Length: 159
Length: 159
Image (cartoon, rainbow over all chains, first blue to last red; front, side, top):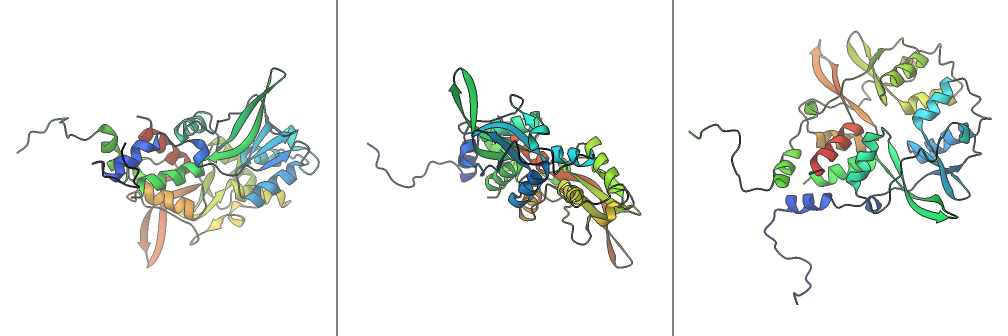
């Protein structure tokens, strides 16, 4: 058997080594912490939560499972629509399941990036799916955004 | 002299070829069209312009030169601050020169990505600088955002 050593020369340049691995990096490896609120949270409190956590998208859960997504764009729309943001619950303005684009932790970052560009969103919830009584439910376990991808771009090209 | 042919075998894998070139890609090669308004534009009209052009950041110019930048975050802040967005000009809420992070068209995408992450912005104006009477002025000639970088990430890893 080959001895287990920390390093041995493969004849490839470090660039190529890293690049060949980039295609395999999983979403779960570079994920951020998701910011979640309940459907009853007011639009105003949702905006405040977005600022306090410095994120561009927040996730809405009900009984522990993902029911909605709200972006800065959704919030801005409510604001210019003369909505009473202190009294309208976030459940009214959110994008609701099943119209939410999600990603699994074992999908690659490349797959997540493609979904982000195709569906024109800034961020995706990383989810674990559960089947209960023949219905699908998503537990939100993370978040991947264009910021994570930009950071990864720097890591792989900054050599 | 070596004949000028379109292709010859270099012995490198296509992956490595492309990867070695990624560090050299200039901002000007992947730039988007900038969306600009004047300082007198109302906050409300600025938000509408942002939606109509589907961008996350707009640039403010005065006499043809960059004076400010406004992001979705800035707009959201005005909205929750009970501001009369129909009557307040965008010049009041924008981030003003010289506090704007810019990038030149011949800087690399890597350099732009680093500025975006370091300064926590979504997008940078790509500018040409001019010196008039010993003062610096910036002409906005493009825009580079996390979206451009995410697209480039897909291009270089989707092989």
